[in-house]
Structures are given as C-alpha cells and as structure tokens.
Length: 316
Image 1 (cartoon, rainbow, N blue to C red):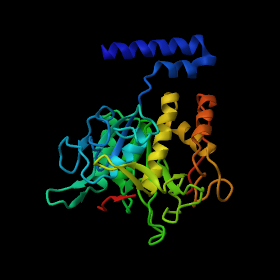
Image 2 (cartoon, helix red, strand yellow):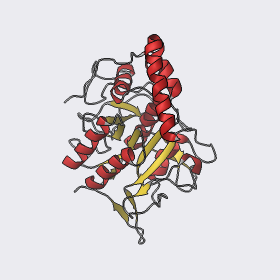
Image 3 (cartoon, rainbow, N blue to C red):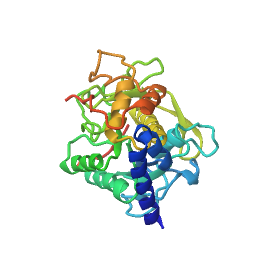
Image 4 (cartoon, rainbow, N blue to C red):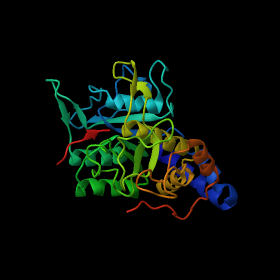
C-alpha cells in the first residue's frame, strides 16, 4: 500500500508540473507530509523530560542496542529546544517534529562517560539517512581531527539532500585555532553563538567553520530529570538553527539542502564585516525573514553563497 501511495503521489506531481507550472512549488509542497524527522546525534533523549510521542526509535552506538535514554542530559537539552518539554514549560521551536535519538556518548555502569569517535559519528550520520529516513541531522558536538570516513558520510548526506547542522565549538578562549568536525566541512551548516544583544559569545569559535549565528547564552531548556535548565554553548545555538531549518522544511518540504542554506545565509542579519566573515559567518539567523524567503524562492535557484575557505566527541 505504501508503494502504491508513493506512485500515486509521484503521478499527481508530474500532472501538476505540466498542468500548473506557475503553481508547481506550492502544489508539490501541499502534497508532501509536513512532519519533519530530525536525527539528534548526541547523548540520547530522556522520556522523563520529553513527550515520548515526539521521540522515534533510534539507536545506541556505544552500547550497541536500542536503549536511547539519556544518562548525561546534553541530548535532552537539545531536544527541549527543538520540541519543548513534557510539561510544556519550555516551548519548542518545532513541537510537531519527530526526533530520532542516535546515542554516540553515554555513561557506563560505573558512571563513567563513554564517547564514540569519528567512525561512530560517521555511521550514525549514514544510519540517520538510510535506516531512519531523517531529512535533518543535528550534531551538537564534534571531533577535533579531520577524518576521511566522517567527510565521506557528510558528502553522502549532501548527495541524499539531507541537511547536517553542527556546532563550531566553545574553546575560542583556550584554543582559538581549533576546528571541529563535521562543522568545518563545507556542506555542513556550522553554527556559532551570540548573546541576547547580538554580540559574538566569547567562547564561540571564530574560523572558517562558522556559517551562521544564533543565541547560545542563558538558554532555558530541560534537564534529563524534567527540570528547567539554563545553559549556554554553541550546542544550543545549533539546536535553534536546526529548529529553524525544520520549520522551513515543514512549510516548504520540496526545498533542497542547497536552497535551505541559501535562504538561511542570505536572510541572516550581518553583524560584523560586510558579507561573510570567519567571526560571525553570514550573520545572525532571522527565522521570520527566512520563512518569507522560503515562500518566494524559485524552484531551482542558482547557488550564490559559498563557505570560505580517533578523537572523541566534545559536547558544545
């Protein structure tokens, strides 16, 4: 039945293309399901904090099983920003999204943190696409060394029209030259942090991995125990951008990954050197303006925005 449904939708889309060329984009969007699936490659998601209906079946790559309960809290905090908490004290950016927790960091029986490496991260990226059918991948962590296997996984995501959004890191003070991957790869939306006044956070990396900024200081979200939590970091700025991307795709599902990046970068509020710069990327994300762009963007725009030119995960 699912196959026949897909064939039917494809046939209708082709008919719309020929019969209503001026309304093709909007008509195609109206026929696509609008619930966006987001892979959260992190520490898991706590069902004590996040409504279980908003959490899909994921996988634990550390324990090699399907237990994705969050024993650390980082992934749950990301989830709270995206979909809100169980009690609705924290309002999520896109509460109708379905989150797929892919655990790449957790605690063992001795309460010791165990983290995966670039190979596990690469596997999670591929599985998010092939096994879990996610359109968006949130990675609020990274590795400090470039990896061929990780780079290939990111390229694969781009080939499959899947958006990868990753944090650029929080070690600007102590290690300003550090590049974090996958944020540093050109196809990835690398996210830095600003404060509520639009100033670049002192901890946010300033290098070629930065594409766009979002607020990452004094952020209210939820702990793994279901209590309100104030936190900061490029991790949480990344979650905000992921939520914005999911909002764009729920509004216009036919947008390509490249179109989404163009919209985000082009509609951002410039705050530093005019145009792109390595401190602030293209500027601060503006969701309302991005949505306006999304409604008017041509079906096949030219790409006009370009990014300048065995390690364990680090939460950000």
